[in-house]
Figure (cartoon, rainbow, N blue to C red):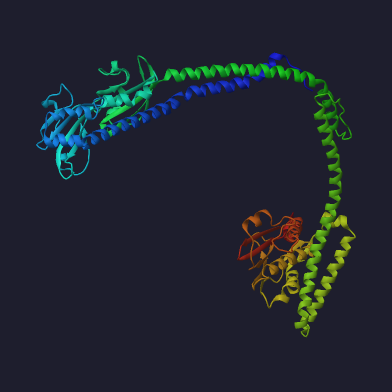
Length: 579
């Protein structure tokens, strides 16, 4: 019976799970801040590197185009110092280049792009340019880590000879500034570029470029040794997560960092919001449950009372509730279950009666099948061996034995209760050798033309068993062995003797198709389990029951494609009498 509880109890029960879930989510959010930020700064670093590469490629294309213009070719070809000033009007590269210098074929400068440049400060062309054919751009590190020098050949109008060179000094600081514009829009981002000596080439905060960056030492050391990765550092302005990697072409390393405070604050806000939401959900759930439980308590009391009566065996009991009662659905379902249970009990009673009949029929059918097979073997060989007096004598004995078995089957039909109960006669001292010989003569000898029969038997072998039942066991095993070799000729081997402890034992082996280990271990001696296409599956089950009832044991050893051996051990007369 459901008893209403105080509202506070429902609230605690409802709020604890959602609060635990909210707390777990809160903790997980804080724990994943660094991994999330690591992915963010790695993306920022990749974006910055791509932007730097794009700006550099644009400037390389611009200086190469400038070297290919007819005006530049004419200026260099004429060696006109005055006309060299026209270089300023051809293209505006002052945003990225600190100097642009034209050299004639005598390797002498013609013009200075920057007004305060002096010949002594102008870099000389790359010596390889004088032997180049075609429009190729050469680059090399500048005199400082923040510059990159380009040399482009200038050909004559026909492009057949090199008449000069164009040398430009690219300011990497301006390149990094342009590439960092998208990232610097976030006030919490920091971009640092270091050369191989650890000197700051570029810093998004201009005030930090002149001196060392506080707290950045470990990452700076990793950058100067060409390492890549994601790490955390703390400075006076806050705690940061930084991604860093080298730029081999520029002989520098880049680090992009973001302040963790922004992400930590977001995690705290979401965590507190989840906790408040969990409290609201717990309050609402407790309110709904309390009202619902109060409405159901009356109906559930009636359901509980009637259900207890049904559990005690009153299956005719029905639970009657009003249609407006919340427990009406439960009551209707219980009524349906009890009706099905009553019907199931009635069907099971009928099934037990039918199963008894089926079991009796199956057992009698199996015994009848064995008797008919013995008769079929005898009758099938009459036409070929009827003139043999010994065969007629054996056939008469076989027909007499088969007739006796059929009579016994009819007698068992008149005693279904004892037939099903598996009752056995009192065991007596029985010689197994004549029984083995008789069964082989009736079931296997007629097929000697198809199979080889090998028998190794002692003069006598006594056991304490029911003679009729043990003969049925031997007949079952021999017939199974013969049927296993029906597709090809084989060898039937029957041996008998005593075990090391003096117990009588016999084995029946065939060279038939054999059985799988799984079938032998799990299904061989179970009723209605067989490998035959037309078998019933009761023979070996009956054999095991008879042998177990006699106090013996039966085992099987089989190999697929090689054959099967059944070993039967029975109680000996002296051993049994001593017990």
